[in-house]
Amino acid sequence: MRTRRVMAQVRFETISVLRNGEQLLLSLILPLGLLIFLAKAPLLSGLGIVAPGSDPLTVALPGALSLCLASTAFTGQAIATAFDRRYGVLRQLATTPLGTNGLILGKLGAVIVVVIIQFMLAFAIALGLGFNGPVNTLALVLTTLLGTAALLSLGLLMAGTVRAEATLAGANLIWVLMAGVGGLVIAHPGEWGTVVGYLPSGALGDAMRAAVGGAGFDVKALIVLLVWGLVGTLAARRWFRFE
Image 1 (tube, rainbow, N blue to C red):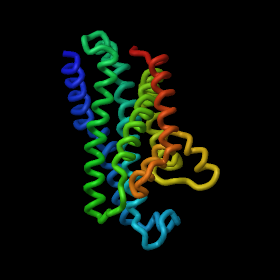
Image 2 (image 1 turned 180 degrees about the vertical axis):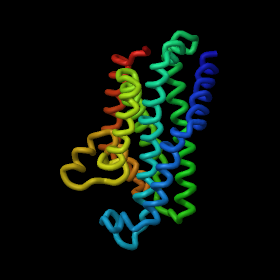
Image 3 (image 1 turned 180 degrees about the horizontal axis):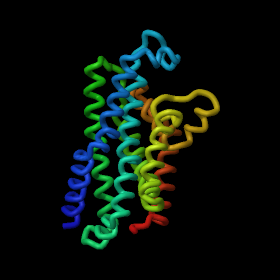
Image 4 (image 1 turned 60 degrees about the horizontal axis):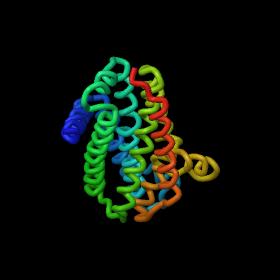
């Protein structure tokens, strides 16, 4: 019975995301549009990020995958949960047989389902554009799981402690910063690259670039994601408020 309740919540949360136009824009259209733009425009070679004649998809694809995950696990869930909290939905669900843990598992399951859809579309587009780079499947799965845990826990922490309007503005701003200067889409050289490598966005980007295009494990980035996931989970359990 408990498993059925959790799966029903996963289905409900997933359908809610896929039917929400703003969520689709953030989760699918922008990341996949960025993938096509970086693959076709000479931006990456012009900035010296890829060597002339090299395949830009080795950078564009892992960047788009990281952005997909951040959009769904962090920004989308933070905003949706914050407004559910504001309207009293969380308080009501927490008192049902689903319970607090079932609610969290439902959100986690929905994120995983949506991320799988995003990744399938991203790989399909990349293959259509000619991507033939190496992919380490185990590293990709591990990066996805640890990245989801870290970003989702931090998103729920924000949603459970900050007003809905502030979460809406803050989560979108953080998404832009992660994509632009946070190491999520492209690696940053020098001291700034070292700094962002210890942030969830930079660690996710580094681990994803190693798994897709590099066909390896970035052990340091995976450890950073694991630590952030543990910290975020403990903080969310301690300070998350349902009303």
